[in-house]
Image 1: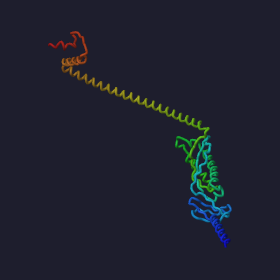
Image 2: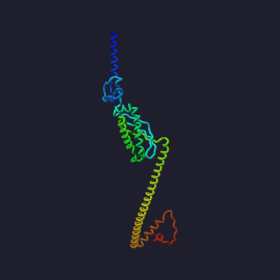
Image 3: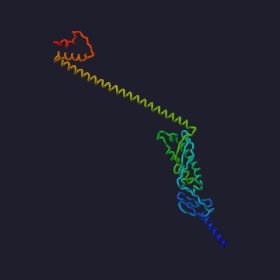
Image 4: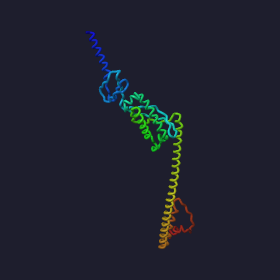
Length: 293
Protein backbone atom coordinates (compact mmCIF):
# COMPACT_ATOMS: atom_id res chain seq x y z
CA UNK A 1 0.00 0.00 0.00
CA UNK A 2 2.82 2.34 0.90
CA UNK A 3 4.60 1.53 -2.36
CA UNK A 4 1.44 2.39 -4.30
CA UNK A 5 1.28 5.78 -2.60
CA UNK A 6 4.84 6.46 -3.66
CA UNK A 7 3.91 5.62 -7.22
CA UNK A 8 0.98 8.05 -7.11
CA UNK A 9 3.15 10.82 -5.72
CA UNK A 10 5.78 10.17 -8.37
CA UNK A 11 3.18 10.28 -11.12
CA UNK A 12 1.77 13.56 -9.77
CA UNK A 13 5.24 15.11 -9.56
CA UNK A 14 6.07 14.02 -13.10
CA UNK A 15 2.72 15.35 -14.32
CA UNK A 16 3.38 18.69 -12.64
CA UNK A 17 6.84 18.89 -14.21
CA UNK A 18 5.40 18.06 -17.62
CA UNK A 19 2.62 20.64 -17.15
CA UNK A 20 5.18 23.22 -16.12
CA UNK A 21 7.07 22.75 -19.39
CA UNK A 22 3.85 22.55 -21.43
CA UNK A 23 2.06 25.68 -20.17
CA UNK A 24 3.38 29.21 -20.65
CA UNK A 25 2.13 32.81 -20.60
CA UNK A 26 2.59 35.33 -23.42
CA UNK A 27 2.92 38.97 -22.29
CA UNK A 28 1.27 41.87 -24.18
CA UNK A 29 4.68 43.12 -25.27
CA UNK A 30 5.80 39.74 -26.61
CA UNK A 31 5.42 37.39 -29.52
CA UNK A 32 6.00 33.69 -28.86
CA UNK A 33 7.27 31.09 -31.33
CA UNK A 34 6.91 27.39 -30.57
CA UNK A 35 9.70 25.29 -32.05
CA UNK A 36 9.72 21.54 -32.45
CA UNK A 37 13.20 20.08 -32.47
CA UNK A 38 14.48 23.58 -33.38
CA UNK A 39 12.05 24.31 -36.25
CA UNK A 40 9.27 26.93 -35.85
CA UNK A 41 5.80 25.32 -35.86
CA UNK A 42 3.52 27.97 -34.36
CA UNK A 43 3.52 31.74 -33.77
CA UNK A 44 1.47 33.22 -30.92
CA UNK A 45 0.89 36.97 -30.93
CA UNK A 46 -2.09 37.23 -28.56
CA UNK A 47 -1.37 37.71 -24.86
CA UNK A 48 -2.55 35.07 -22.40
CA UNK A 49 -2.11 31.47 -21.24
CA UNK A 50 -0.98 28.94 -23.88
CA UNK A 51 0.27 25.38 -24.08
CA UNK A 52 2.67 23.24 -26.04
CA UNK A 53 4.12 19.77 -25.98
CA UNK A 54 6.58 19.20 -23.16
CA UNK A 55 10.28 19.60 -23.63
CA UNK A 56 12.36 18.39 -25.30
CA UNK A 57 9.75 17.87 -28.00
CA UNK A 58 8.71 21.51 -28.17
CA UNK A 59 10.25 24.73 -26.83
CA UNK A 60 9.09 28.34 -26.80
CA UNK A 61 11.02 31.48 -27.74
CA UNK A 62 9.85 34.97 -26.76
CA UNK A 63 10.52 38.11 -28.82
CA UNK A 64 9.85 41.73 -27.91
CA UNK A 65 7.22 43.22 -30.23
CA UNK A 66 7.79 46.85 -29.10
CA UNK A 67 9.78 49.51 -30.91
CA UNK A 68 13.47 48.97 -30.18
CA UNK A 69 16.43 51.33 -30.51
CA UNK A 70 19.87 50.29 -31.68
CA UNK A 71 22.77 52.69 -31.14
CA UNK A 72 25.76 51.54 -33.23
CA UNK A 73 29.24 52.94 -32.79
CA UNK A 74 30.18 56.11 -34.74
CA UNK A 75 31.63 55.34 -38.18
CA UNK A 76 33.91 57.41 -40.41
CA UNK A 77 32.76 58.08 -43.99
CA UNK A 78 34.01 59.97 -47.05
CA UNK A 79 31.80 62.60 -48.68
CA UNK A 80 31.51 63.34 -52.38
CA UNK A 81 34.08 66.16 -52.12
CA UNK A 82 36.58 63.87 -50.33
CA UNK A 83 35.98 65.11 -46.78
CA UNK A 84 36.16 62.66 -43.90
CA UNK A 85 33.26 62.81 -41.43
CA UNK A 86 32.32 60.72 -38.41
CA UNK A 87 28.59 59.91 -38.21
CA UNK A 88 26.90 58.82 -34.99
CA UNK A 89 23.43 57.47 -35.84
CA UNK A 90 20.73 55.39 -34.21
CA UNK A 91 18.13 52.94 -35.59
CA UNK A 92 14.53 52.56 -34.44
CA UNK A 93 13.27 49.10 -35.41
CA UNK A 94 10.86 46.29 -34.54
CA UNK A 95 10.40 42.62 -35.40
CA UNK A 96 8.03 42.39 -38.36
CA UNK A 97 8.25 38.69 -39.28
CA UNK A 98 9.11 36.59 -36.18
CA UNK A 99 9.63 33.37 -38.14
CA UNK A 100 12.14 34.92 -40.56
CA UNK A 101 13.76 36.74 -37.65
CA UNK A 102 14.28 33.51 -35.71
CA UNK A 103 15.55 31.58 -38.72
CA UNK A 104 18.07 34.28 -39.80
CA UNK A 105 19.35 36.29 -36.83
CA UNK A 106 17.97 34.20 -33.91
CA UNK A 107 17.90 37.03 -31.31
CA UNK A 108 18.29 40.78 -30.76
CA UNK A 109 22.08 40.64 -30.56
CA UNK A 110 22.24 38.89 -33.94
CA UNK A 111 19.81 41.41 -35.42
CA UNK A 112 21.92 44.37 -34.28
CA UNK A 113 25.03 42.85 -35.80
CA UNK A 114 23.26 42.59 -39.17
CA UNK A 115 21.78 46.09 -38.87
CA UNK A 116 25.20 47.57 -38.15
CA UNK A 117 26.39 46.28 -41.53
CA UNK A 118 23.25 47.47 -43.33
CA UNK A 119 23.34 50.97 -41.81
CA UNK A 120 27.05 51.38 -42.50
CA UNK A 121 26.55 50.34 -46.13
CA UNK A 122 23.59 52.65 -46.71
CA UNK A 123 25.21 55.62 -44.96
CA UNK A 124 28.45 55.18 -46.89
CA UNK A 125 26.61 55.04 -50.22
CA UNK A 126 24.43 58.05 -49.38
CA UNK A 127 27.19 60.31 -48.02
CA UNK A 128 29.42 59.43 -50.95
CA UNK A 129 26.91 61.11 -53.26
CA UNK A 130 26.77 64.46 -51.41
CA UNK A 131 29.35 67.16 -50.62
CA UNK A 132 30.16 68.26 -47.09
CA UNK A 133 28.06 71.43 -47.29
CA UNK A 134 24.95 69.22 -47.69
CA UNK A 135 25.61 68.10 -44.09
CA UNK A 136 27.13 71.24 -42.53
CA UNK A 137 26.35 74.71 -43.83
CA UNK A 138 25.28 78.18 -42.67
CA UNK A 139 22.97 78.27 -45.69
CA UNK A 140 19.79 76.31 -44.93
CA UNK A 141 19.00 75.93 -48.63
CA UNK A 142 22.11 73.76 -49.08
CA UNK A 143 21.36 71.40 -46.18
CA UNK A 144 20.23 67.90 -47.22
CA UNK A 145 20.49 65.96 -43.93
CA UNK A 146 16.77 65.14 -43.74
CA UNK A 147 16.66 64.03 -47.37
CA UNK A 148 19.81 61.92 -46.97
CA UNK A 149 18.55 60.15 -43.83
CA UNK A 150 15.19 59.44 -45.46
CA UNK A 151 17.02 57.67 -48.27
CA UNK A 152 19.17 55.74 -45.78
CA UNK A 153 16.04 54.68 -43.85
CA UNK A 154 14.32 53.47 -47.01
CA UNK A 155 17.37 51.44 -48.06
CA UNK A 156 17.81 49.87 -44.62
CA UNK A 157 14.09 49.05 -44.37
CA UNK A 158 14.06 47.29 -47.73
CA UNK A 159 17.12 45.13 -47.00
CA UNK A 160 16.25 44.31 -43.38
CA UNK A 161 12.64 43.38 -44.16
CA UNK A 162 13.50 41.09 -47.06
CA UNK A 163 16.46 39.35 -45.40
CA UNK A 164 15.78 39.31 -41.66
CA UNK A 165 12.08 40.07 -41.02
CA UNK A 166 13.00 43.39 -39.42
CA UNK A 167 11.03 46.60 -39.89
CA UNK A 168 13.44 49.56 -39.78
CA UNK A 169 11.18 52.44 -38.73
CA UNK A 170 13.77 55.20 -38.90
CA UNK A 171 17.48 55.90 -39.09
CA UNK A 172 18.50 59.25 -37.62
CA UNK A 173 21.79 61.08 -37.25
CA UNK A 174 22.62 62.03 -33.65
CA UNK A 175 25.93 63.72 -34.19
CA UNK A 176 28.24 64.65 -37.04
CA UNK A 177 31.91 65.24 -36.32
CA UNK A 178 35.31 65.26 -37.97
CA UNK A 179 38.07 62.73 -37.35
CA UNK A 180 40.41 63.90 -34.60
CA UNK A 181 43.36 64.17 -36.99
CA UNK A 182 41.35 66.42 -39.35
CA UNK A 183 39.53 68.63 -36.86
CA UNK A 184 42.14 71.37 -36.61
CA UNK A 185 42.62 71.70 -40.37
CA UNK A 186 38.84 71.76 -40.91
CA UNK A 187 38.38 74.40 -38.22
CA UNK A 188 41.21 76.45 -39.74
CA UNK A 189 39.55 76.31 -43.17
CA UNK A 190 36.20 77.24 -41.69
CA UNK A 191 37.78 80.12 -39.76
CA UNK A 192 39.57 81.36 -42.89
CA UNK A 193 36.33 81.16 -44.86
CA UNK A 194 34.50 83.16 -42.18
CA UNK A 195 37.34 85.73 -42.18
CA UNK A 196 37.08 86.10 -45.96
CA UNK A 197 33.34 86.54 -45.69
CA UNK A 198 33.73 89.09 -42.90
CA UNK A 199 36.31 91.07 -44.91
CA UNK A 200 34.02 91.07 -47.93
CA UNK A 201 31.12 92.32 -45.82
CA UNK A 202 33.32 95.02 -44.26
CA UNK A 203 34.59 96.10 -47.67
CA UNK A 204 31.07 96.27 -49.05
CA UNK A 205 29.97 98.19 -45.96
CA UNK A 206 32.80 100.71 -46.27
CA UNK A 207 32.04 101.17 -49.96
CA UNK A 208 28.38 101.77 -49.17
CA UNK A 209 29.30 104.17 -46.36
CA UNK A 210 31.52 106.20 -48.73
CA UNK A 211 28.72 106.32 -51.29
CA UNK A 212 26.20 107.44 -48.66
CA UNK A 213 28.55 110.11 -47.31
CA UNK A 214 29.27 111.40 -50.81
CA UNK A 215 25.56 111.54 -51.57
CA UNK A 216 24.91 113.30 -48.26
CA UNK A 217 27.68 115.84 -48.95
CA UNK A 218 26.29 116.46 -52.41
CA UNK A 219 22.81 117.04 -51.03
CA UNK A 220 24.25 119.29 -48.31
CA UNK A 221 26.06 121.44 -50.87
CA UNK A 222 22.94 121.64 -53.00
CA UNK A 223 20.84 122.64 -49.98
CA UNK A 224 23.39 125.26 -48.88
CA UNK A 225 23.69 126.64 -52.39
CA UNK A 226 19.94 126.86 -52.71
CA UNK A 227 19.66 128.49 -49.28
CA UNK A 228 22.44 131.00 -50.12
CA UNK A 229 20.74 131.78 -53.41
CA UNK A 230 17.42 132.29 -51.65
CA UNK A 231 19.02 134.41 -48.92
CA UNK A 232 20.80 136.61 -51.45
CA UNK A 233 17.57 137.01 -53.33
CA UNK A 234 15.73 138.02 -50.15
CA UNK A 235 18.59 140.31 -49.09
CA UNK A 236 18.62 141.96 -52.50
CA UNK A 237 14.88 142.48 -52.41
CA UNK A 238 15.19 143.87 -48.86
CA UNK A 239 18.01 146.23 -49.87
CA UNK A 240 16.02 147.37 -52.84
CA UNK A 241 12.99 147.94 -50.62
CA UNK A 242 15.09 149.86 -48.10
CA UNK A 243 16.58 151.95 -50.87
CA UNK A 244 13.11 152.79 -52.11
CA UNK A 245 12.01 153.78 -48.62
CA UNK A 246 15.10 155.93 -48.14
CA UNK A 247 14.52 157.53 -51.51
CA UNK A 248 10.90 158.35 -50.73
CA UNK A 249 11.87 159.70 -47.31
CA UNK A 250 14.59 161.87 -48.79
CA UNK A 251 12.29 163.18 -51.50
CA UNK A 252 9.61 164.01 -48.93
CA UNK A 253 11.88 165.99 -46.56
CA UNK A 254 15.61 166.02 -47.28
CA UNK A 255 16.45 168.02 -44.18
CA UNK A 256 14.54 165.67 -41.83
CA UNK A 257 16.00 162.63 -43.59
CA UNK A 258 19.51 163.99 -43.06
CA UNK A 259 18.67 164.63 -39.40
CA UNK A 260 17.41 161.05 -38.82
CA UNK A 261 20.39 159.51 -40.57
CA UNK A 262 22.75 161.56 -38.43
CA UNK A 263 21.05 160.36 -35.27
CA UNK A 264 21.36 156.77 -36.49
CA UNK A 265 25.06 157.36 -37.04
CA UNK A 266 25.43 158.65 -33.49
CA UNK A 267 23.71 155.58 -32.13
CA UNK A 268 25.91 153.25 -34.20
CA UNK A 269 29.29 154.57 -33.10
CA UNK A 270 28.72 156.39 -29.82
CA UNK A 271 28.51 154.52 -26.49
CA UNK A 272 29.93 154.83 -22.97
CA UNK A 273 33.22 153.16 -23.89
CA UNK A 274 33.91 155.07 -27.10
CA UNK A 275 35.94 158.26 -27.34
CA UNK A 276 35.67 160.18 -30.60
CA UNK A 277 37.91 163.12 -31.51
CA UNK A 278 36.58 165.24 -34.34
CA UNK A 279 37.25 168.72 -35.66
CA UNK A 280 34.78 171.42 -34.77
CA UNK A 281 33.62 171.79 -38.31
CA UNK A 282 32.83 168.06 -38.72
CA UNK A 283 29.42 167.35 -40.17
CA UNK A 284 28.83 164.79 -37.43
CA UNK A 285 29.07 167.55 -34.83
CA UNK A 286 26.73 169.81 -36.69
CA UNK A 287 23.74 168.84 -34.50
CA UNK A 288 25.70 169.47 -31.31
CA UNK A 289 26.84 172.86 -32.60
CA UNK A 290 23.23 173.76 -33.25
CA UNK A 291 22.09 172.85 -29.78
CA UNK A 292 22.13 176.45 -28.67
CA UNK A 293 20.32 177.74 -31.70
